[in-house]
Image (cartoon, rainbow, N blue to C red; front, side, top):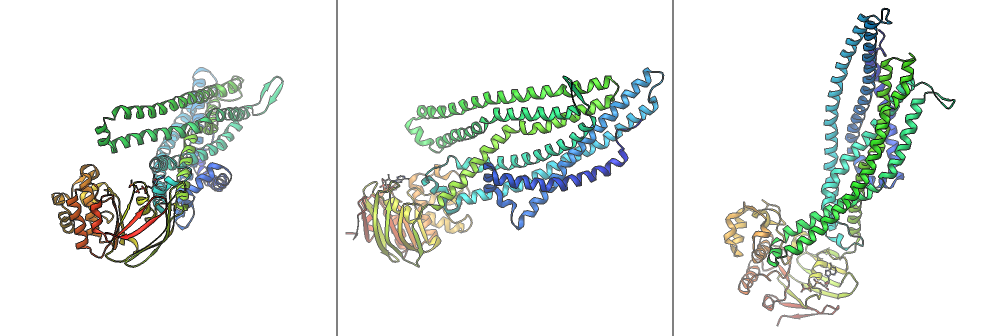
Length: 615
Ligand SMILES: Nc1ncnc2c1ncn2[C@@H]1O[C@H](COP(=O)(O)OP(=O)(O)OP(=O)(O)O)[C@@H](O)[C@H]1O
């Protein structure tokens, strides 16, 4: 029995095919992507987010991995092609065997048919081993590529978010963005996974279309409809069919982009409301605010569900169309090839091979149609990640106070501070403080005391003037409730120094000094310290940091508001005794704070200010 192809020569021929296909596909792949990046909106977004990963001296490793993945993808296409020839041979062998058993003078003897059948089984064994091995290697390399990319992109997005205090200052830009945390955590992952699966899926689909079109071309016969004969009808019909159905599917699926975007946004909003409830648990519990919280949570959740129903309705239409299209395609090749089999023009193997080649061309062309909802989710991730990077950039572009280094002293000249609406809070403030000086800032609530400190810390965009101060960590800002990072108590007390940078003995002695001796033996304990410690204890941690870091200047914003007056006196005395040269600037309503300062700055909230000695 004659096999459909010469299998003994086919292995080398296939290896040669894969190499040729790679040499053709790789440049086309690069050119198509370059055109998409330059001409489509989502392509430009992609490039802004991750273009840097594919340029520069380090990027050759990424290209190497992409090349391996491309070769593996093309190998899989080639193996699929070989499988269809195996199907052809095994089916034809069976057909001849049946013929030999039922007709006295068969075309092929039973022995030859049996030999053909067993040979095709051996070929299958080899193909199956190659198929499984390729799939596993592909999975591993694909994951390797994705993980490397994800690590890079995560670093890029987190660094960008931290750069220039974008994480804080983004609240001041015109179009603020929602849930940056979710954009970093979940969209980065989706972006990487879907990018590589869509790109490789598209390559695989296109290579399959080319390869199987060749098979269909060879197996297609003419079709006569209303006296018009279409040569190679099956091929043209599958192409026309898939093209039309894909256009309709894109049209039906288009709203999924917006719905997926909303889905992420609404879910993130719901999750954030839950996180806020957890963070403010004690406050809510004191107020018995469960009813209001429940209403807020449920209304957010209702938004999620409403949108989800829209997604369901749209997916129903989208999937309904796709499933219907796929089912119709099932019988297509049989309808076209069966009459030719009945006429004795082709073998059963040919019918079976046409059917599988038709299926492959159809599935490959349908890849674009069926991936549309994945692409819709991908677009949403692109928009969200790009939005985050743009917001970071805009945050960095906002104005901020000009600062310069000055050893050991503080100078403010012509400092203006405004509200976001442009209302002046402080006009032209000039000030000079030398080592050991202490200044208390007073003024009615809302007069701009905290905003002055924000401006000097370069957080506040609506401030001008010049600020000279000791460089880097020599200038410390302490807010009313000091920030306590997650981790053990050592990490919390040492902040912003890294844990371990300050010796435990020093930490313990300092805790005793600020009346937190009861915590001295708990340095290794991991807790959410911001929830465990009382506000007064947290404020004492703030004072401990002054003693540990010994800054040249420290700005304190209501730093003793939660401790009693006796303890406040002791804490200030401690600072004045142990770090007497440190310049102190305190914002405080309580008059008992004044006695620890030499000068007083009074703000009236309309721009005017007055500097006087503390009486
Ligand atoms: N993020 C913001 N957006 C808009 N306005 C703000 C913002 N932060 C502060 N303000 C406004 O700026 C003004 C000054 O606020 P600031 O917090 O500096 O007052 P303060 O003197 O420290 O008040 P308090 O003594 O109550 O702490 C207030 O009118 C406040 O509403």
